[in-house]
Length: 247
Ligand SMILES: [Zn+2]
Image (tube, rainbow, N blue to C red; front, side, top):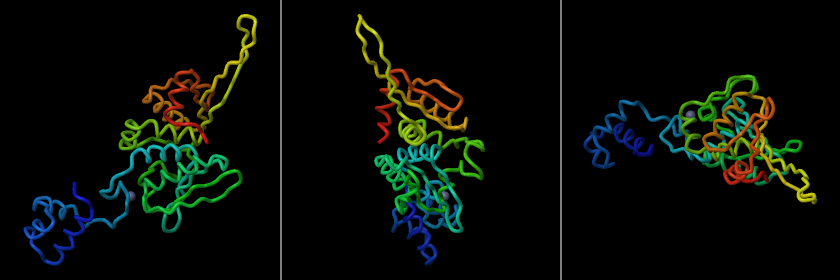
């Protein structure tokens, strides 16, 4: 696969009046490929966007960022760009760092901003192409519109459910440390029952969470209308290993 720079070089050489054979020799690209490139039209301006240009997407970071976006993120339109914002709990520095790293990996040229808000730090970055990568962007609040992943997004999550679940649970989830006392052979013993809960008012987003849990073979149940719980010991351990603690 040829990179975009090679395509641009070919276009520039053609504009200088060189023949296909000359360009082919200089760039080491077959003439049939060069002709196919020309038929595709001018090369788009370099955008770093995996949807618009031939650039690779860091799929694990993207899967996590998609989870964060669906959990506590939003995209807003400005005159010359879109702002992607993910609101993070100010007391969880590792998650703030994780969101920032995922944004940087998905768009390496991105400048990442950390904007303080009451009890929160909003991690944000401006780019024209955020809606290409997050086509779920639309008017109104996420739970008031239909959220359906595109086929390419589903393919990313199918191979990387762990990072996607990390994004979801580290934004709209919590790990509760429930415990009970039970009398065993005349003695009171304490039993800890940690469990993960994902709470979101969008039925579509809850469904995506359940789908990803199924992909990761983590059993779940709907514990209330807006909450998905993972509470069996083996499943909690599996999810812990996949996504890590919230910190
Ligand atoms: Zn794009």
